[in-house]
Amino acid sequence: MDHIYDMIIVGGGPGGYTAALYAARAGMKTALIEKLSAGGQMALTEQIDNYPGFEEGIEGYALGFKMQQQAERFGAETLYSEVTGLQLKEAIKTVQTADGSYQAKTVVLATGANPRPLGVAGEQACLGRGIHYCASCDGMFYKDKTVMVVGGGNTAAADALLLSRLCRKVILVHRRDTLRATKLYHSSPEQAENVEFRWNSAVDALRFDEEAFRGVALKNLQTGEVTNVDCDGVFVAIGRNPATELVQGQLELDPSGYVLADETCRTNLPGVFAVGDVRSKALRQVITAAADGAVAAFYAEEYLAERME
Image 1: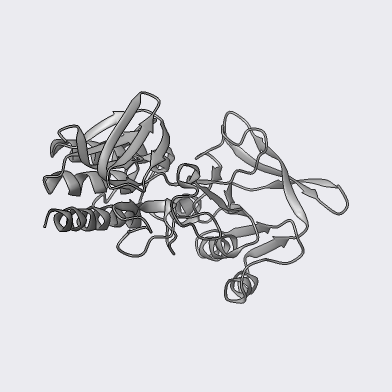
Image 2 (image 1 turned 90 degrees about the vertical axis):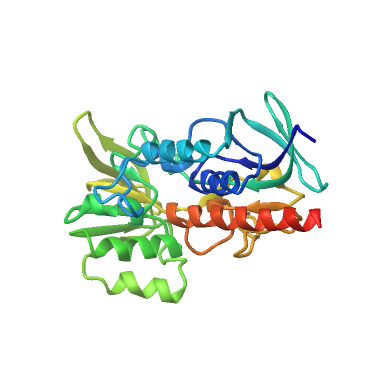
């Protein structure tokens, strides 16, 4: 039993490292497995201004590193490897990695969700420098500028409305001739005077050089005509892909593929918790992921205590 952890966390984003911090401080033998570096998607964000405690903001990678150091200060271990399999239905769970297998009494899934990309050339090169996937995270960088939102669902409509309050002009691009957003979201951007709609259109190419992001080439899907549109930044809101491949057939998922876990972060399997962007929830932000991590550790500690009675 000396080699069985009380908790293994899969994923080193803010939810994962907060769970590690709270679990380790509670005296639980804790390991976190991360395949790249601390921070997860947060580490790709150039500047985070909406996480409390940093009045001048903080770079995402730096915040992730601070979270890692804080958790490790209380004894949490960080194991760098890629998780290749999970066996979660037994009392002792098994986490298989590229470097071997580990066992734990509880598992916290903190694998996140990846933004669905546009799929055009240069997108990765412009990440954080013209291309963004979170309006509430990065919108402030475009105050009084012209931006584009790509998408037609609730997120795209909400992003357009949020950005319309910050930016001089918002161009909303959608593949169809009407938004897919629900009426509540649909009507709001239409009422904003500085929101322009480009229907039946898609981004055909990105226009940028070494000095700056210049805009996009938009293709009209009905006529095939391609038009250059100038803008300072593009916010992509065409969906996200939750990283739940490892738990297919074990954990209950919602229709969009996110793990069904309530506000205790418990899943349908005893001793298994889901935190952060991989969990079915209303708001996906750094602070809500961190809150999930604290909650999961609390209920994991309670679960272990009940098993010892």
